[in-house]
Length: 153
Image 1 (cartoon, rainbow, N blue to C red):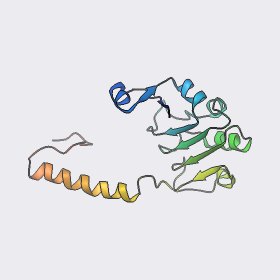
Image 2 (image 1 turned 45 degrees about the vertical axis):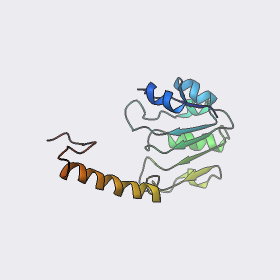
Image 3 (image 1 turned 180 degrees about the horizontal axis):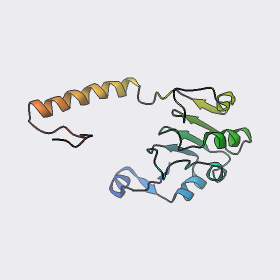
């Protein structure tokens, strides 16, 4: 299987270590069978997948949004799925959360989930393990926690 990716800030070392080839967004859109989105919502990513980009996808392709609502234009996706522009889509995130009724939910080629990607048994277990490791790092080793969000000492 060939794994390709697009990133505004590609990590070439990571890609080389994992057999990933970075390509342009257009190349990724036009050649992928499955596109999964894992980006934060920013000015650059807002409506990144709109009608024009979705139309560039293969007719047999699937779009999976596991990142943030707003990256995929939901109305454009609805119309594309209704018109069979792409084969299908799934989303774990939506512009309006908690989930409201949406025409997407009536389509057989769309799978919605309710923002649960991080709630697998493995993910919950990993959260506990990381918390304990951070506590040990701070208390026993006297080190600053990894991934401090506010940057205060």
